[in-house]
Image 1 (cartoon, rainbow, N blue to C red):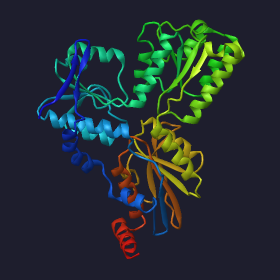
Image 2 (tube, rainbow, N blue to C red; image 1 turned 180 degrees about the vertical axis):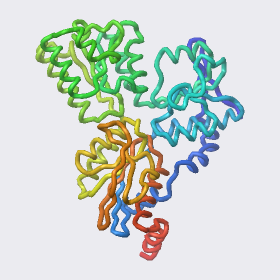
Image 3 (tube, one colour; image 1 turned 45 degrees about the vertical axis):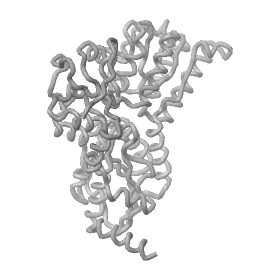
Image 4 (tube, rainbow, N blue to C red; image 1 turned 90 degrees about the vertical axis):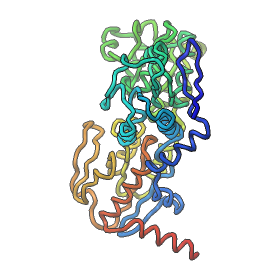
Length: 418
């Protein structure tokens, strides 16, 4: 099987794996690993399954988004096209442990993170390297370019849209205020674009409290060293708040809460209005909507589900997944919520292991699934495969003594009879 490689002297080699014949060859393998018959059936029957006093409703939108599906397809395609060749990936392709474990089982070697098994410096010309969906920092891309590696770039299109914004900010001498987690792979990649021109700057704010601190500095000035200490590791080299907060553009990590990003934009804009006045605002402030569409769809679907009279929510996905964590955060504000990696965490009706967002660790809760009638909502982040939702639904009903396959077979029979 031939592989088209797009190459230029000044750019890394890119492997074209999106050809229909290659995609067809890997589709069956991908579906075998991640497809869920139960999820498909639940969607067919309105997202609701009820038996044994248990009523389970899935959010309308959950699980893999297009960008994640594309990234996984390309990783599988790389292994199919290069069956005997070492393949490397810069880090976790997405923040889901089961998916990353599957890549390890395919003998794809990780260059960073908890699964690291190879070194970036050991790469050689024509080695195949997968760029994760989060993208990669500019200096890493330059190293890969210099080595002549073949790149399988799975960077999400929404992430690249943010890169365009911060790059434009830098060209026009606007400092990018990035709403995100400073050490997250996506934010690291984005911030590196803000400084690529050697004249751009950035400052990463995590939340409203940090935003308010910056707003006070914009309005009144303050102790420069104190600000730099507070945001250590979250700003560009040479960043001077007395100079570089004069003109700002707001961007974000695409998986943050939309409502929080919008409030951050509003507060920063008001601070610039207070400092410079309405006639000058366009010279000092700009903002763009750079929240991932899939992230927003899943948040909107959860808001709608939370309007139901739920007794509890189960959120499924990787504990280090930003978009999944935000779903859990939204949910726990309204109803008892259990954020689990997979169905194995539901040990019994008397014990569940789940991630505590406030303590940032897994905890156990006793007697979490009481007897009687229960209305349970389920959602998952954009990095969670449907098979994990399948396992979760099965386990919930299993704990109530219900055979899900028999339950769905009965629904099919009634639908056919109708």
